Image (tube, rainbow, N blue to C red; front, side, top):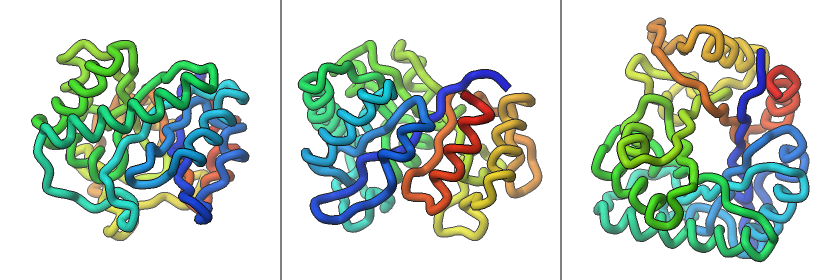
Length: 242
């Protein structure tokens, strides 16, 4: 099927609370989106995850989100463009410093959760995120939902953009992800996930829950590290794609 970037959200433990199986997942992906301490993660977790990713030759990306540990960054928050700019700069800077002391170079930025979804449809928030990334380091790659306001904003400001698609999420007819609160939002069968990815790569489209084929550009494929099936998905998908 050809080689393609496979990314996963990692570094989501906090203090004594452990989430995910990062060390195992890192063996099967090419890029890691590492939580920067706002929605998840802390300095110790960040550094440990960065070190492990670099040791395994995995690209390291910043995964900035809302300052909402209790809601894991998945609750929408009313926020101004200036506030978004500042929180993204802050989080990129924190992870970039850790990557530097570990001898690596930050590869990309992928917004997390509600911030990601809001920026996918709101051009003002999207532009604020993209400007923050470019002002910190114009060489950073933006990972954003395929065909969204976020990827459009990135391309408009001259960033390199990876259009992201999801192995373990279903889609709506407008190209957005099915909300996690809705039925059938998560794909739990690895064969169904492979079928969805294959269709995306082969046809440049994804079948929505409404039965509509939505055009899509798969530059990078995401699996979720907090999904109970994450390791099985990563093994199966990487064997096909990488």
